Image (cartoon, rainbow, N blue to C red; front, side, top):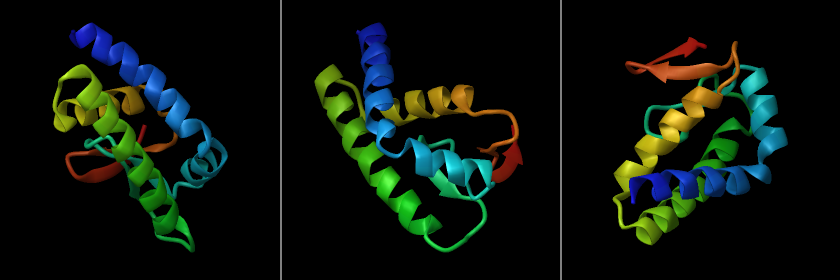
Length: 106
């Protein structure tokens, strides 16, 4: 069951982030946003429109996470934890991740 959930999560996340890829990538490259331990984006450096982007992306992520949790019979928190691990692994060198509450470059 957990393997199925992970596979579904990976596919679901890939599809749900596709629409935001350019904006997210630009914001990450500029050091404006980073991946948090909760599976969501966070604002590293506030700039015009950054909070709106983060809110929009996180809303879509949460919707997808809730769908995946329900479909696989697991909790939202489990899906968020899996998503955070995947996001950390996919984060490019030089982009920000949150470690112990602080932003650090990977």
